[in-house]
Length: 128
Image (cartoon, rainbow, N blue to C red):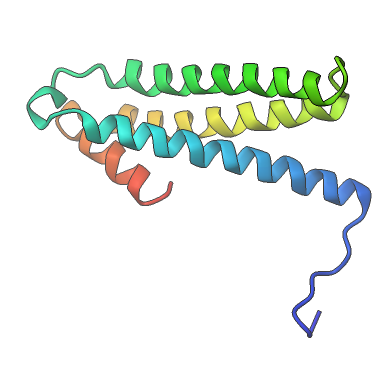
């Protein structure tokens, strides 16, 4: 709209927007934690670091912890039951986490060992 207000969104559109927001939020959360984990490794130890283990360990650990917390909070708010929309939101969150890990893993696959660690950190810093 010309006056800066957003156009109204239908119920289905609103739900898709919410799923996208949840996926992106989780992707950013995982990317920030991965970046912090990779940056925290001393340069002298970077060559001996299991980058695969770090990427997927951090991603799976965060995703599982978030899933557990989301499930518990959904039950608390939903009087003991989990709604189907909650399951869809959790799926979107897990997809966002997996997406980041896959993108970072591609960098590890495509680059030689001598530069993969630096490239992964730079890729995360660039927001990819």
